[in-house]
Each structure stands twice: as structure tokens, then as C-alpha cells.
Image 1 (cartoon, helix red, strand yellow):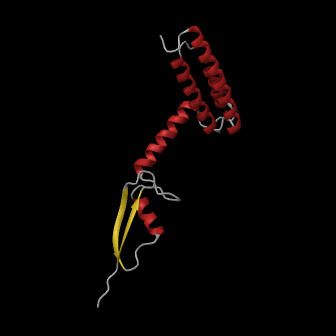
Image 2 (cartoon, rainbow, N blue to C red; image 1 turned 30 degrees about the vertical axis):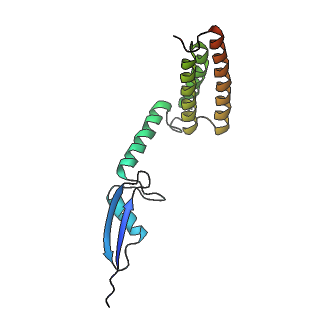
Image 3 (cartoon, helix red, strand yellow; image 1 turned 135 degrees about the horizontal axis):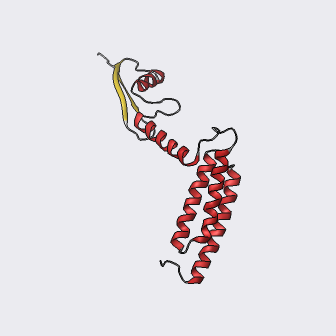
Length: 157
């Protein structure tokens, strides 16, 4: 009786699950190290996760857009980018009182949340400071919603 063993090695992206590369080999198969090597040949990044080229590019575009919006942490020696980001965040919070409808207040609050997270992720704010700012913004937004409802403009305009 003849026994034949064939091992199939397949590499998939850990982010999107897309098939990257695969092959059949008689006998033992291929080690994880060699599979990673061939995945890199296909444009993937390897490490703890295997990330295909399209996911890597889309993640880089997302990171670059955040850096353009908030500035890149650690790139300015005098802290000017951090000061600009925190000043913009302060202006967004101050702008809550100028909103005339509940919808506008919610939109402004969501913008504040996103910008605060961007500042935190860029290293301009500490995690605890970001939480404190968001709690304060939430209280201010609640007060503005009460004001708008009292004026009778809850969802109008």
C-alpha cells in the first residue's frame, strides 16, 4: 500500500480575509516563516498579523488623513501643532452655544468627540484629559439642548 501526503498552504489577510497566496507541496509542507516570506513577495506585511497590500494602503490613507486633519504627533519641536489642535477643540466646544436646533447641537457634539479622539491619538492630549473634556462637552451640550427646548426650537429651522 502506497501512502502519499500532500500539504496545502494558504495565506489569507488577517484584516479582510482575502486569499493572498497558496501552494501544494508533497511531504512536510512549508514553515510559517517561509509562508510569511512569500506573502511579503506578494506585497503583504507580516508580523503578528498578515496584512494584504490593499488593506495596508487603505490603513495608511486613513492615518494620513488623520495626520492632515490634526497634525502629526512629535513632528513639531515647539508644540505649535498641539496648541493649534487644542485651540480648535476649544473653539468647537465654545461653538455649542451658537447652535439653534437640537440637531445642530448633536452634530457639533459628535464633531467635538471625533476631534478630541484625533487629538488623543495624535498625542496632543492624554487619555484622562480627553475623557474629562468629553464629559464637560457632554454637560454643555445637555445644557444647550435644554435651552433650545425652552425656546421651542427643538427640531425646527
